Structure formats: C-alpha cells, structure tokens
Length: 186
Image (cartoon, rainbow, N blue to C red; front, side, top):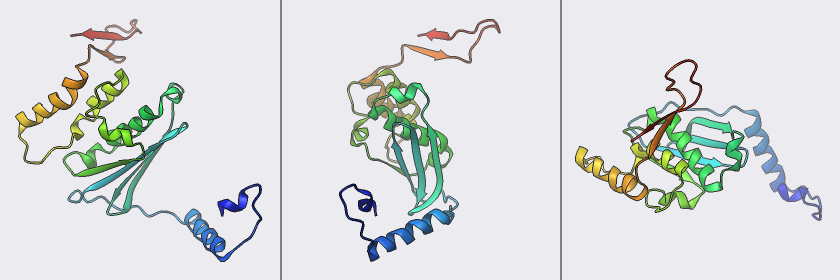
C-alpha cells in the first residue's frame, strides 16, 4: 500500500492491497493481548531508538508481556545513534530487571555494534556509566561462582574501561542551602 502513495506511481487497488488494508485495520482497531510472564522460561527484549524516542518490547515465546517507550529528553536529542541504541537497552534492563535478573534473556537491537559493547576499547563516560548499570547482565554460565563472576566483571568492564574517577550525585546535599552537586573523589 505504501507504493500507492508515491508521486509517480499509478494508483491501482489490488487484492493484495485490500488484504493489507484489512489486516492494518484489524490491528489498529483491536487491543493487543498481553500475557503474564513465566519466570521459568527465557525472555526476549527488543529495543530500538530514533531521534524522537526509545522503545522496547518484552516478550516470551513470541507473545508480548509489556511495552515500554519514552520520548527523548532535550539533551538526549544530541546523542549519537550508538548511544541512543544503548540507552534503549539500558532503559529496558532497568525497568524490567525484576523479570530479567536471574533468568535467561536475549536482547535484540538493530544496531550491530552493540554486540561488541563489552569488548570495545574506547567508551565515552556516558557509555561507561551505563555499562556499570548493565553489568548484572554480562553473559555468564549459571555454574559460575562468586570469584569467577568478579573476575568477569574486572576483565570485561573495569580492565578495558577503567573505574570511575568520581561519583556525582544530585541527591547528596549536605545542607538544604547546598543546591550544587556533591562530588566524591576516590
């Protein structure tokens, strides 16, 4: 049907167009049915970003559990595509962590370079901060013990990217008059 809207295309309504129109009408006029999650089964998380917002879908066995979307904040509209796509993944993992922690989940994104986020040599400060938030989701085997998990965290996150030089919090005010940010150096 999209082809019919092109400038130099002759408008010709075919049976295929009618079928597409009926399917589109059906999907727009009926409510999607969400299922209850089963924590014994793996989850699928689909994430995408655009220049106006972030969107995510939590699924299990091809059925939708939850939708999530939000508009970009003013400053986020200047982020590069890589950071926007990573922001969508971080948003999904943050909001749905109660489903995903301790369960198998696969994250799908149309941005191929996110596949190598844990092995990239150079990350900006924003990406480093986000990486510490998703560190709980480093791919591991369920038989790993504490020392092996700590080793993975050090080798996959701290060694290539370093530890943060400072922690900035807008919630740590020493007095009500102190409206600035408090910065703790290591």
